[in-house]
Every structure is written in C-alpha cells, then in structure tokens.
Length: 444
Ligand SMILES: [Zn+2]
Ligand SMILES: [Zn+2]
Image 1 (cartoon, helix red, strand yellow):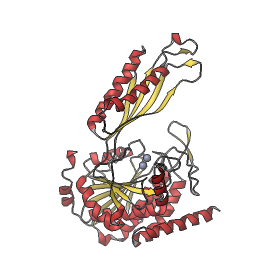
Image 2 (image 1 turned 60 degrees about the vertical axis):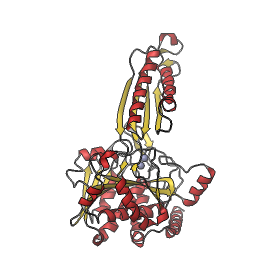
Image 3 (image 1 turned 135 degrees about the vertical axis):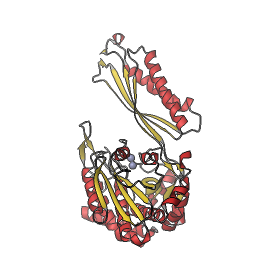
Image 4 (image 1 turned 180 degrees about the vertical axis):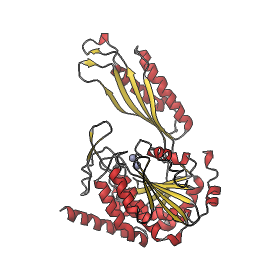
C-alpha cells in the first residue's frame, strides 16, 4: 500500500512537472534529488544534531566535489574548481524542527529525538530544508556535468542550525571564509507557500526582518496561594507586562512601520496553590528598520522594569537579549541582474518581484562578512490548492506548521532550474565585474 501510494505520488508529481518549464537537464538529475528528499524528509534531525543528514549530503557530493565535513559542527563544504573566475557560494540548511508532522504523507516523519534540554520531541522538516538539500544535490550534479558552461569556483555549503541557533556564524567562526575561498557572491533560496510551485520571487534590498530573541525573568516573592498578601505574585506581574508590551506596536511605533512583538512562551509555577517566586517569558521582536528595532527594544526594557517596580518586585527583572539576527539584504544590482537568467530558465511570468517577509534568517551573517547576497523565494504551494486558498482567504499552512508540505515535483524542479540559472550567470562573470556591480551594497 505504501509503495503504491509513493508510486502514485511520483506519477502525480511527474504530471505536474511536465507542465512546468523546467529544462531537460533537470529531468536527468531529478530522480537522485527526489530520492534524497524522501530520505531526508523521513529522517529529520534537530539543529546542531544533523549528523546523518550531513553525512548523506557529503556522500552524494564527494564523487565530483572536494568535500570537507564538520565545519562549525555538522557543516559541510563542497568545492568544485573549474579554472579562473569568481567564487560563488550556494547554501542550504541542514536542520529540522521540533514539530509533530501531521501531513499524512506516505513519507511523513515519525522521528522523535531528545532536544538540548533532554526532552523527547517529535521532529519534522517543517521548514522545507530537506527540499533545499535535494535541490542543491540536483544543482551540484548539473554543474559538475556541464563544466564547459561556466568557470570559476563553485562552493556548496550545508549549514547546520539555521533555526534560531546562528549556525552561519558558527561556520564563519570555524573558518568558512578563511580555510576555504571567500565567495564573491552568496546565493540561497527558501521554499514556502507564499507562491505556487513553479514561481520564484525576487526581493531587491531588504528581504526579511531583523529578529531579536529576548528572555525576561520577573522576580516576585513566593508563598501560599491562599495567603497572597504575604507574597509578590510574579505571574500577575508577567500578565500585566505581556499586555503592556502589546501596546508598543499599536501605540508607540509609527503607523505603517513593520514591527512585531510576540510573547511566545511563559513559564511559572508548579502547583495551583503555590505562588512562585519568579516567572520567565520568551519574546521575538521583528522589524525591518534599525531605528524601529532600537525603539522597540528600549520600550520592552522600560515597560518590563516599570511593571515590576509598580508591583513592588524585590528585584529588577532580568532582560536577556540572547540572540539578534540582522535582516537579510539582497544586493539590488545583483537582484536586478539575476532576474533575466531566471526568466529565461523558468518563463517570464514565473519570476515575480516579492515583498519583504516577516520571518528571519541567519544568511545575514554571510552578508555581514562583506559577501553580497542573493536570497530568493521558491514557490511551494500546490497550484490548485493555492488558488483555492486565495479564493477562500484561508491561507495554505506556513513554514513550521505540522501540515507544511510543498508540492514536491514542481517545487524541486523549479528550485534546481533556478539555482543552475543563477550560478551559471554569476560564474560567467568576472570577479571584478561582480565587485563593481555590488559596490553600492554597504549603503543600506
Ligand atoms: Zn527555513
Ligand atoms: Zn524555519
């Protein structure tokens, strides 16, 4: 039964593939990429634990590429030198998420792992990084078999721990740009349901948000739940703080500026009749502009301290901004230039200009190292379901959802075709020309 369903899925995939303008050379590498996808999807691994994943990717690339493993943890670097020319990096992430898959697909993940806190959690490739790895394999095979179509150095990077752990930074600190050639341009894509499969979105300039992760610990005075007068209740302070924090975007930030303040968790207490002595909560803050980011971070500090003081808390709250990622900046000249090869490969109507998105990405670390970046969106939605969702106003599941399931055949085909088109264009340009083209990048 399972075999039959897989066969049916492949056949259905093949039907939709025939309708996409992907080239014949993608068809020749597609079976390998598809098989790797199914394997990775069924066997996901959490951030910083992508041991098997990295080994699989490295094993597939080793025949044609010079492969180094364990760069920044489980990171993989694969280099193919092909004469003089620029160095172009193409990156995929390796990690999956603590999400229980509910897609019902025949190759759905049933994996559980221990997370870093020792808890048993379900694991799923709910962000599509499996599709990115499969695409990079297809692209790697095409580039290795068509060395007469480009020259320079191709650098493929399998990066661990993208999901909030800054794996890009760890790879850089482990010599990504010193032990290996420093790229003239870095490229990556991300699949999502913002577009139907077959489409790619290009966003010149700011691609996504600055992301700040904040942990707040509020201190109170514990005691019996039936004697609240002898305590200072940190849960009540936390509740007031959360509501006050929600007034930052609505009352303090200029209308029209992109700003998000989300309290994603709150932890306090052990039992119904005990007032605990502290409460902890975790926030994410998303912005496009640096001045809005500063304004919000300052407001969070002011409000959190103010609420604790108003309640007579025995200590000031601890406000720990434990991670801050900058937004990914797409070099506008590069984005402009790469539209033409994408349109030639995918069809003019299948390349669209896309709005910046509200999620974040540690790809920004590569850009901060002075490497101009081109990060683009890959449509993942089944075109029929996408149209239905649009008509009903009920969007398809987003990345990180237990129901996230890209329309594999067309999305993977398009991803490979797009990556090859972008790489060939860049690898047919001299490093000098690329430097000139991207010289304005620092002005954002
Ligand atoms: Zn992702
Ligand atoms: Zn993600």
